[in-house]
Image 1 (tube, rainbow, N blue to C red):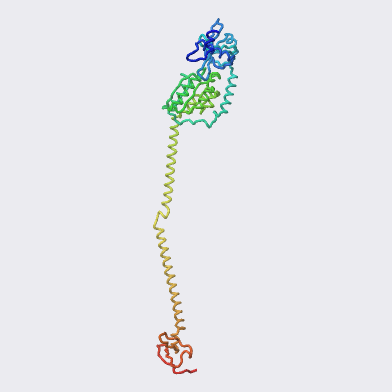
Image 2: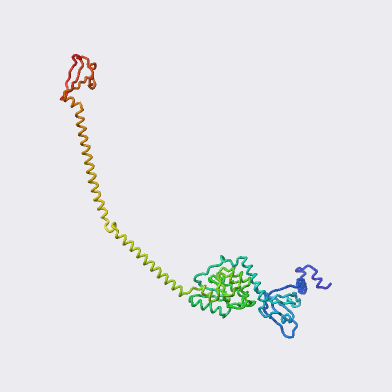
Length: 416
């Protein structure tokens, strides 16, 4: 047993540390057990010198800042069906190898397959279906753009035509507009990480009201970063509205569907985000004119209504109605006086007739015709009218009333 094997056989601890060679050999053993694998990525560097038996490449992940050293036979690069260059997306088959002497990891490949346009488009379509199923394309999630943003974040290539178009059109439409420009690589293996960093920085800035992601036209491979899954999810997660202006009208990367607004071109993005000062001033002038006309029309209508009210008799001569009512009241009062007088006269006539009848039928008239009323005097009482002889026996004190007075008498006897 070697000393290395003896050291590796004992438990690892602070009192029994492993030497570097033991750790390196263990790592090499673990990696060797991984076996052969398929790896996908983008080629960022190719070093194939003439006359050498090994070519060295760097394979990079298109979504994150991670890379892997690759070695292969130069014939694999020369015999590839599609020309391989920096930025090409490939699928490699090989075995990882750990070199203990240098402490480096390298993928030794025996097969390289370039991903063609058809495969790229098929992958984009599969990703499109996945994102759509997750709801990232839902129109209800789209955030509205501010009418007049105070600051606009712009992610584009350095000194690109897209940058010039956006800045010039925006300045021409609204001279006071301000931009926060972040220049990044817009194609190739380093595009996605740089765009993600710029997007995160602008989204975190509270002064940025909207973000424009702009790039000119290009091939499918050139626009591939804007269909990257990580970028699409980052755009969807932004709290700031994002406008995607990638390529021209026929181009449709996935970022267009995830963004809050898709612009056909960078120039169109500037028009969508920045209002036209001239058009807005014309609109304001038109609204002012319409408001003034509406106000004048309203005043004229109200003046007409007031004139009609003033022409009404009740307002033109307010006392006329009172005078007419006064005359009516006089007529009614005179009529009432006539009616009352007539009623009094009628009732007076009726009373006279009743008086005459009463006088004719009353006892006074009877007495005046020679009759008398005989009353019996009752001690301590009122006299009582005598109606028969039995009520006045002889000696009864009587009171005899005639038309012009009364006298006392006594009953001397009866006669029948």
